[in-house]
Image (cartoon, rainbow, N blue to C red; front, top):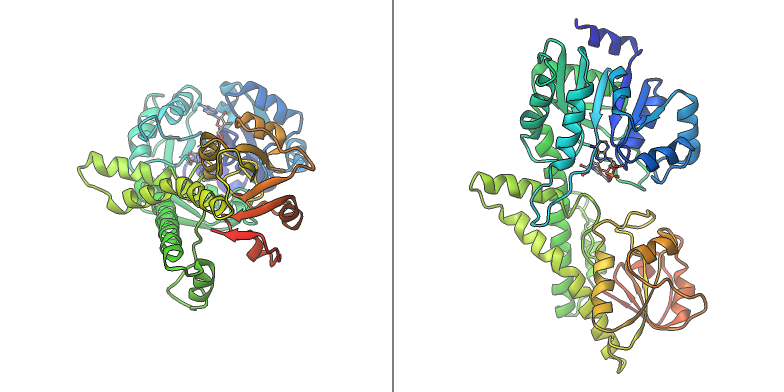
Length: 428
Ligand SMILES: NC(=O)c1ccc[n+]([C@@H]2O[C@H](COP(=O)([O-])OP(=O)(O)OC[C@H]3O[C@@H](n4cnc5c(N)ncnc54)[C@H](O)[C@@H]3O)[C@@H](O)[C@H]2O)c1
């Protein structure tokens, strides 16, 4: 048995996390909670300093969690050299799309360069950033061999997708983890390591399986949300209530999973991940039709939502131009402060472009974040022609909002979900 495996089995080992965002920070904290040493490295110096002072901006890690982890020995650093003490290096850096919706691999490549510089013999490397099938073979193997290490002898390499959904009840340690190594030994050792970090591990035969499994999961969501979005548009034309239709279909005990319409998809995953797969497929001259169609439908939803708001105003003799509109929620989903790729922001930008007098309230993102996104924060006590519910944070007082506006346009069926009776609500 390798020295590394023995250390992992003894429980006396250290994980080094590269990139301390929504994925990396909860993982490092989960490791500390499991009694495993953790070193957290991020290139953002100011951010690391804030974390060191005990302030977390990641919803799934409270300040108390962070402080408890620090007390238990969690080391935060912006000096990559500190990572050389780690037995396992986990890469959790961003993997966005570029200007032409092609994978932007610059963060993963830069983290791979860091791995080359800091890795020592008897180390496991795991990539967790979402990416196209083949990345771990193409980028991480060369990164470790460039350090003069031999695969399966003194270094092992795997991919293990992160499935955490920020703000949801299930946290990193509770979610089953798919683990695929670039060699059978890499799979086995990575599975052994993750077994100590999370409640259950599902080993697969290769890193590419794990890479593609993640993309299948999120493509499945993107495609089904697109189906719900198209159904909603169809139902509107047919004058049928889509929300009651979905509730009815969801009573089927098998073969149906409910997905809901909305102003579009947002966040760091659902709008982006399918494009990694599509890009890779096109490289192989395969045209991914489902992904393209889902993207077309979902990308159109902000415009559709803005058009429906325009119609609702028109029915009351008003136009978007000049209407006093209160936009509710800019986060991409309820109860979190993340507004990356948010469809709510797209809707508000369209309304703004059409001449609305727009004010925005997002109690979770806060007025500073609202201003940073380019909007005017709502003035307390104002009246509006229409309040538009785009992200239904639990803290929004919907009953009160219905009193502040002549009309409410509810793109999330939030009033219905919370059984709030108000006679001025139009549901998308
Ligand atoms: N956010 C989610 O819900 C989620 C869920 C599953 C998977 N993912 C995937 O996980 C990966 C990370 O996403 P995230 O949401 O945690 O990103 P994030 O933007 O929240 O955090 C990434 C962190 O990495 C740091 N960083 C960037 N380049 C670095 C480098 N070269 N070295 C060290 N640190 C570096 C950044 O400063 C930042 O703090 C992405 O591939 C994403 O697709 C995200």
